[in-house]
Image (tube, rainbow, N blue to C red):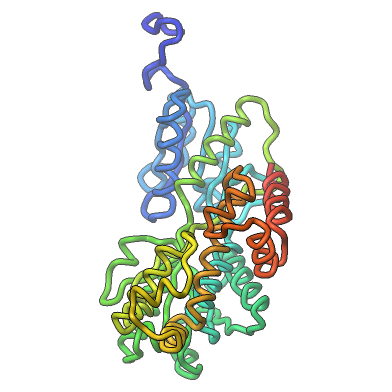
Length: 393
């Protein structure tokens, strides 16, 4: 203990041992991961963070940093195999947080890329799109896994989507021109999705009524730029960073690292203009849908929606189905079940408590509806979530 530090007093950042973060911060995803590391560090206060910028400093600098900065461990965004090889050779405990290149023999924390694809396909299905395309970045494992999750979600819905291996924008657009509309496009990354979206607008296709486009990453600079803003699946980089830092501490404390990558679920789609059919709906219908989405888990009935819109039941059903692809009643149920899945996976609330929080007064009725929609009872669903979490430890 430093002579300047009293017992039970938190050491200053300069006196604490340090974890070295070796990152390239030119992309939004590693920046979010780094934010998660810093957030965990500020809350934990056991160590300091030192930063190795892969774009400005050499691998020799990385080795020197570890020798001179009292580093006790490394979290690396392994953007290439040379970086990962150097981290291994340094000999300190480490955790990798990069999706590419794929590694299988390092402690790793990643977004669940199959779930990213599943989330994307689910979002488009909820919007009523049955003709769907995935644009794949060839030779990128994270893109292949996203495509697999996307494919499996469509297969569950009885739909065969179109998969395009991206080679050039010209060849991609030629394929898209030959497909029936309306068409939902999911691209492996936000950058790819933005470029496809801009080219669709140049062709003159109506977005999102004729062509809907969804990216992966939720890079706000990319998504909010352009004539039409881009919807995207967030990769939860902050959670990845905090989880990786906690895992590194466990390894430093003597725990065995997990044999498989720790996978973090993506967030719900951040919807913007490229998939938001509500923005093009007649104002009364848009108001009805927003009312449903705000109050679905408060136990509302269709009669409540009719009161705030002064529409007939037949008109409400017909117009909402035209926008969403399903009825107002189905939208209420969908939102309630999504809320239930989240609470079962992320809280210790009882089934009775979850039932009330999802708008069901009778737990038995809630459990019956959940099983009809999900294929599992709430208890079975929660047990599966716990089992999958244990498998990553």
